[in-house]
Image (cartoon, rainbow, N blue to C red; front, side, top):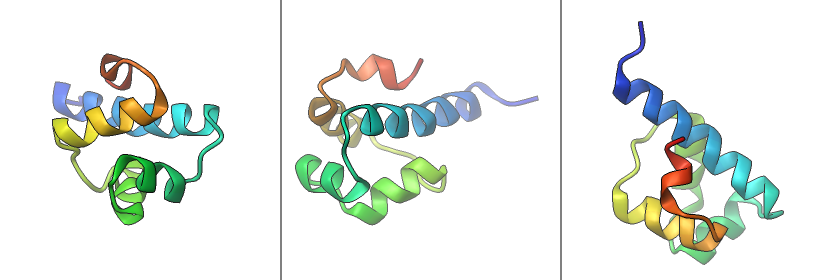
Length: 72
């Protein structure tokens, strides 16, 4: 059984990718615009890294979404 944290991490991973693709951005473009390393974006989307709230807010700003959408 997955913990709440595991489910949230999975939601974030899926949603960053979904909204990035919806905006037509590559991982590099998202990283540059959010001032986050491309490798970090890749790791977030792969579920290898846990994002900090500051990074999530930067990503959400670039994706022009409310940060809460990344958790759903």
